[in-house]
Length: 362
Image 1 (cartoon, rainbow, N blue to C red):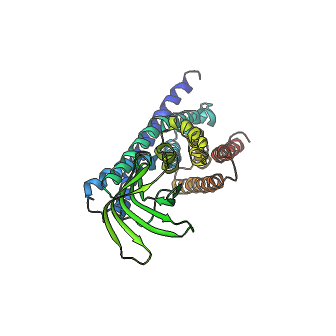
Image 2: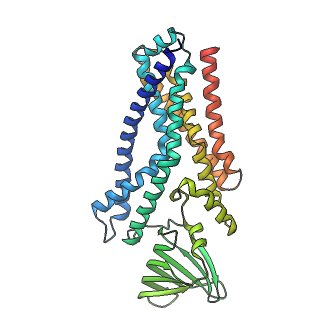
Image 3: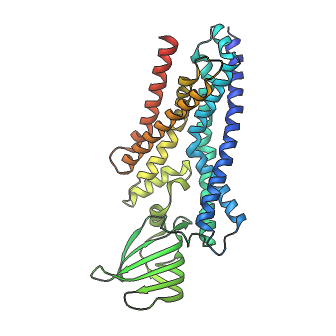
């Protein structure tokens, strides 16, 4: 028995990794098609948009989406692997040899822990840099100008010239370069004095430098300007903390982002949530293995696949809904981000462990 378990472990590990890579490639292709279709719908109206540009932008966004859906890929790959082993009687023979479910599930859990570790280091760093590059392309080619709503948060600044509220449909370079920028300038009575819509805006030394501007005032006709400036006292570091998405920050830089945001008095909830979700991801992927085992270990020669897959997908969907709901509470400040990140992991692990203990040892 001493040589049997290591040999089986390597075999199960290899079988699972092949299945995971296969499903991962299929999901990557599907994500690419969906993102390209959505990007084409949103960006195709821009003058500088081309099909090749859209394909390239979608390729850069794929790693970020993959990181979000990788728990479901792990769930489906785990179910598929266990079903294949069951259909070929390999799990039956393994159990007959005295190997428990915990022993032959251990290689799958180990594989998912490794996948989780790689996803928060290599994949996350690559995805964050790729997403930053995609945003830079959108801003530099003014592809975000025709979108219907602002994608970045709105900022309010106060200067001697009055208050200004600004927003943009796309940002790059740490939020200091805006595309599809809108500036609302207020008078002393806090009424909108004028509105500036710029194709792009760059944060300079004490001013926002706007290009291709439409100036809209109360009862005056729309005025078109090649350039314009708006005074500001915002610093590049503050703007970056306010406008930079947590998804564009690599894992190893999130700690610094959180500290910087707090030093400016800004809420760092999104950065903290992203950090704890990434830390918890290996454990979540391991829990997905237990969820998959709940619906896949019972031996049925025929007719099990559909029921098992639907059961696993339903369990994953419920877990996803619960995770998103808890994250919404965390973003609202109701619960700490660390609780929001780890509670779904603990629930999934406890549920999977309880069911398996009942089936295998009960």
